[in-house]
Image 1 (cartoon, rainbow, N blue to C red):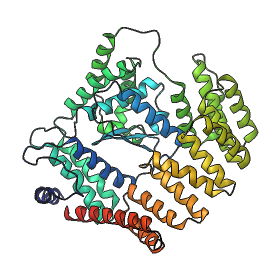
Image 2 (cartoon, rainbow, N blue to C red; image 1 turned 60 degrees about the vertical axis):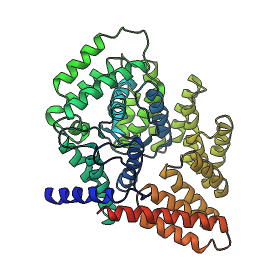
Image 3 (cartoon, one colour; image 1 turned 135 degrees about the vertical axis):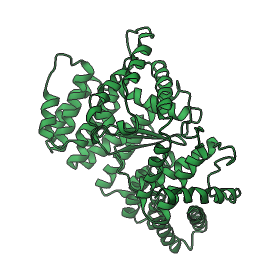
Image 4 (cartoon, helix red, strand yellow; image 1 turned 120 degrees about the horizontal axis):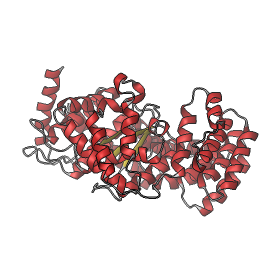
Length: 475
């Protein structure tokens, strides 16, 4: 196996050296110096993400997506990351894990919401991952291995996955890179801790959050299990906790630290989405503890509303939802909750009425647009849903779910050419190039009388063919 991998690496160096003018390959940099450009990292990251998505189970909750995007851009303002062209993926996995891949790819498990107790603890992990990006740990030369070698391993696994039609092949790269990096992982982790802590404090979170998060992880370190898969790539030796406590002691205490209500509401959504026992979760939300503050009370009531909705107890769900709106009438998640309950109960007209009103005040809001499109589909009005989703696809062109929903709406509306084109975009973003080609060819058959659409489809096909040829060359 090792011999095979090194042969791949040897051939990859030769291929890249002979492919400097191939526009379909990422421009990684100078092979002799081992440097990788930021542009190279960006291209590499997107290529990796598309293949990763082909085998990943995503958590497509629009409210969680909006929260993660807004949150990450907020904390980026106080980070050292220069290239902030991020792509985010939330994995439907209750284990606690997060990662940062080259080119601004940020991955988060739903377990990050479920198992953290404050937004500061969540932020401490995300600041740590941003530090990996800002310091370009995937592209820094260490010992006998340079960043270009790592990039080639990563790209090679992508190529193998495409050519062999085996998405799992992409998992070779991170594992091998991790193995090659064992001699310097601890140094990188300490640097990410230090820089991440500075970002955490500058962003307004409790300095104690980092050590608190370490303690949460350390409790399970003796028997690492799947619930704490973060520990496999981010071990927590005692000195990291000690260093964190020393850093926090050197920061002056403040009266208030950032700990948004939105975090707790997204946490509740993740808990309900991953729950296997709604009655047990309902009992937890109904319980009252001495240390429950105002935000915790709202979080539990919101979770209770979500549980009732899942149990189809819509009257109880509406009751809890309306009590929340009385507390904070302007909270958009509370407002959207009413819309979601109407959708679940099948009340299309009520859902449309609320959705249109909310969207008129919150133009192009992702979550409201998503649910309003669902309401139009429910009301047998796919044309209106298509109109909304086309706008979303322009605002969020890298979100596979948007293209998937748009394709469904276009199919119901009878826009078959649009259906094939949107499906193709979905398959491209999820690394299934052959399926994308099939959809575009079907669209091409129907576009004989539409010159601009036909040209667009042909151009898209040429781009896919170039990418496939380049990836095939790398094997």
